[in-house]
Image (spheres, one colour):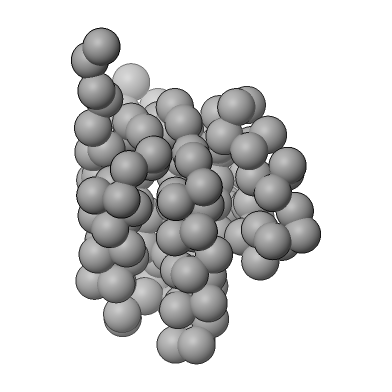
Length: 129
């Protein structure tokens, strides 16, 4: 059985840090890597976790998300999860109310956080095509 490790890529757009996560958050080393990536974003106003590439999230990963929500809140930073895969979204929803603090951001909210309107989004998409 091949283990898919967690890969993280970070970008900054103004005061928003975007951390793209890909792989599985099912072992403590993956959860701690996520913690370290978020902890490096002390200057951000918002940390957006792009979970579009996360294939699985277990109890340890969920516990780390709850911890990170509290950690960022204590520092005046918003933490939001964006675009979780269906299985990961179900894991988050099944874990309520424990995971109620973990916010899942809608697309419109993400665009607003980034300061983008639909026109800018289309312009960026056309430039990268």
